[in-house]
Image 1 (cartoon, rainbow, N blue to C red):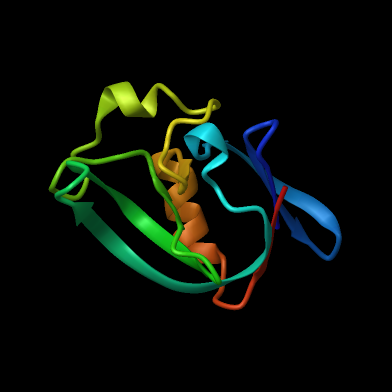
Image 2: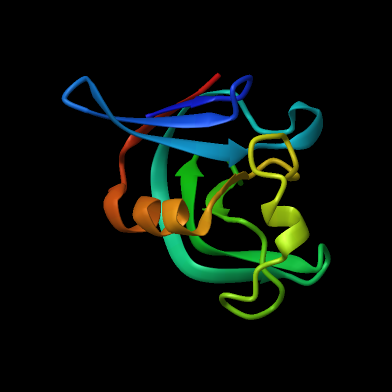
Length: 120
């Protein structure tokens, strides 16, 4: 899997063939870490009271405190913040990689722990 921060895209490969492209919002001010990581943990929903938002279908990558997750939610699962969802395609997060809800669900369901992630 490759994350292209300039293009705001995630590219998923299987057997060296591109199988899925996702539009994302990475971190503002270059706050998404660059480098090689591995998928390592996941969850259904989180909420950060300090920031006043959370996300659904989150998947973390080892070696960083950052996540792939849905566009931001309020405190409850599925209560998406429309204004934040409309920012897909441009840097908008504090460092996590935001995905559309269908893409986040697909990512959560189909990307196994240990999958290599390269962010450039």
